[in-house]
Amino acid sequence: MTTPRGAIRAAVESRHAQAIALSHRIHASPELGFAERMASSLIAAELAACGLDVTLGVCDLPTALTATAGSGPLTIAICAEYDALPDIGHACGHNIIAASACLAAAALAPVAADLGITLRVLGTPAEESGGGKALMLERGAFGGVHAALMAHPAARDCFEPFYPASSPLIASYRGQAAHAAAWPERGINAADAITVAQVGIGLLRQHILGTDRIHGFVSRGGSAANIVPDHTELTLTVRSATLDGLQSLLPRVEACLRAGAMATGCSAEIRQAAPVYAHVRHDAELAAAFAANARMLGHVPPVQEGPERAAGSTDMGNVSQVIPAIHPLMKIDSAGAVNHQPGFAAACAGPDADRLVASAALALAWTIADVATDPEHRARLLAGQASSAEPTDRDLRRPARAVLGCCIVRELRHHTSEVIARVRRGAGYVPQRPHPVTSAEPNPLTRALLEERESER
Picture 1 (tube, rainbow, N blue to C red):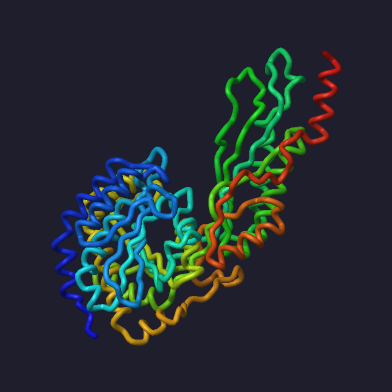
Picture 2: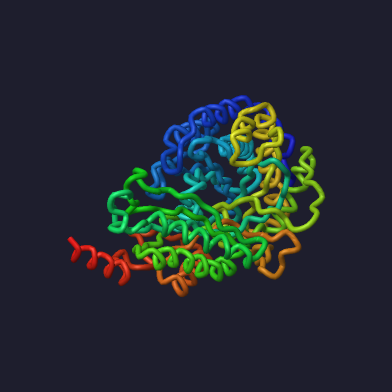
């Protein structure tokens, strides 16, 4: 079986203009996770126009979609993302991901029968904050898929980037309001609880691994300067190179968050409402095939000096725990801006971004055609065999392979293990309600203060 590389290139070139238009329309109207109604409709229409059988609103997610072409025994998925970031829009280039996925599908659909594949495009919402792929994985959208691929724009080329595991947390503190000038002694300051927690986390950073990260912002701080804040929230993301490392780090962060409540007399609840994101396990053979094709198109990663810089995080990690997958980065000229900066958002609708729509599509399509026509690659994938190694926290000098993950923090020390096990079995996690680490009821110190102040009245 020969690879129809020429036909694929011709198809990419013939439909490049439509893909650019799709990219620009998504970029011009950024939509947040699970609200990407316009983007998902545009993508569905484009895939249908390319001859794929499209279903919108799959997996009980209104903005998720599937599209298929061919009926061969080897099923290959291309993942499309299209959610934007708050305030800065498409500063992660998901408009390019969506457009290049559609263009790759347009090139592969006419030759799917010749390649002996079933092509499945998966439109995956809410990568930035909601874990669309994790939910779709749990709900069966990846069922029967032998390999999954996508390509992500960045300020650099990197074909097996390091994506650390992570857990987004929200710490909510409850105190007691009072007039900050007239009756400050009647107040229990929930903003002070955040201050104590942040100091503890700042000191903790001295004693964590170089690949660990703890960062966030005050998402609720109070309502007026003359009111003692009685309800505050601290939103955090905790990251570590692997899920095992994350499991070790989370209790230490939790202790800092608890300390804020204990020191101030507030009550606290630590929760999160997104599925677990596991670390990415790049399939070595798929990554090598993609790298060869990307290099032909002029994408050459720089020589890496020192430990690999983390690329951020993605729910593609969940997929990679279950089936062979890759999530490479491909460079655009962003004038020095990097992902999640306004300058990068501007670059994602520029001329070099338009070029990347075609080169990413071509690299993806060629890679799929290569593995489908190579007897060893094909047999390995049909047998369900991955060629990736699990990273360890002790092996951080070489580019580690891990991705943003999150854990439900409930009875943290043992529940995290349960969630991690679910991710590795291919099950995401859909929380039905907040799971408190500490009781939402006032702690004993708070209760004593309240009783004392009630008796003074």
